[in-house]
Image (tube, rainbow, N blue to C red):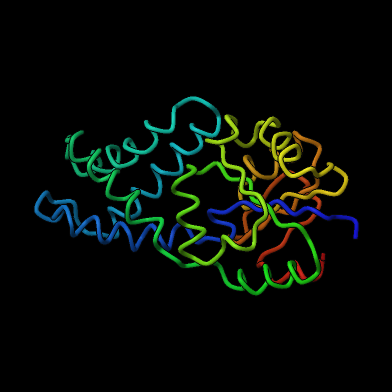
Length: 231
């Protein structure tokens, strides 16, 4: 085997963030009675949240904002779309969301199947995620993924984050892997793919949404089942 250590991303790669977030946000919308504040329809609320979450995660990836700012400002910015300027509410929504989201369990098709397949072939499976330590472990354990991964490296624990090469170097040190026997698998072109390239690591672009890119990953797949053709 050329590769021995496979480093996975979690959100949007294995764990279906958008689908799980929609369920949690439905509960948030009801719990805080947002309809009474004219935060309607829900689909609009959900769409605005996804947009602001993506923008703020990008800023977090690039080191422009801290984690705490990301957590509550995605709610704040979403509420502002409906002319609701209530910081206290935004912070309460953020706290509740981080309580509800990690217990959701929707995965992308073939996730468990492919992890079993790779484990049976004696690959060492690890994770490199920019998510928060407590939240990511909750997602892993609630969705039944935790047992497949030998090491889970979070940006919080490593004091770095993708696409910085330092988090990949930390991951190699933590797992005892070498670059030559390692490969990164993820959906985010900047954090996962460019990040792996920055570290000199091979990479697989898990392109669930059929995005276009000028980057040249080692492999591109459109669904996880295709990993059987590589490993």
